Amino acid sequence: MAKFKHKPLTIEAEPYAPGMEDGWGVISEDGAVQFHADTQAAAETWFQDFDASAGRVAPLIKALEGWQVVESGDWIVTGVTGLRHPMKDEIFQLTYEPVEPESEEHQRRNPELRRFIDESGLV
Image (cartoon, rainbow, N blue to C red; front, side, top):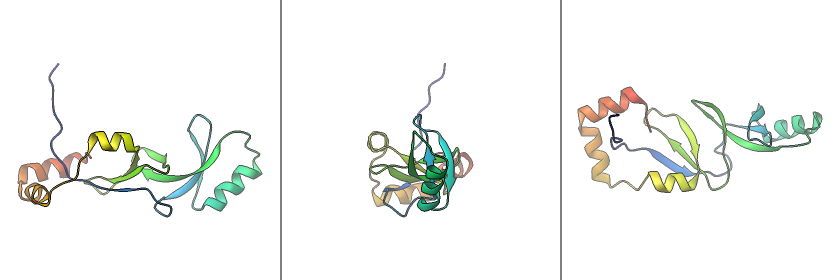
């Protein structure tokens, strides 16, 4: 099988803070999103009205893969296509490092890399 390495990309990321979520959801014990709402209050009302015996209410990010739970300590990563998704701090620290300003400028000036970024949507 052939091997490949990830081309260098520059992404934006920041630690999650309340207010960065796209909505709130009722999360089952296995981590599945059972219900999502625009506000924490609406999610909590649904949780109480339907007497959910297990699970919790948590903030959500609308990602390409669907609604994803975001926790305190997670990072909100914005990929090259502008889509956001949560990432655990441990994975973020293993995957990304700060970018020097000249590296970001190189990426903008390199047309082959820019085309790859625009076409792939990879983070």
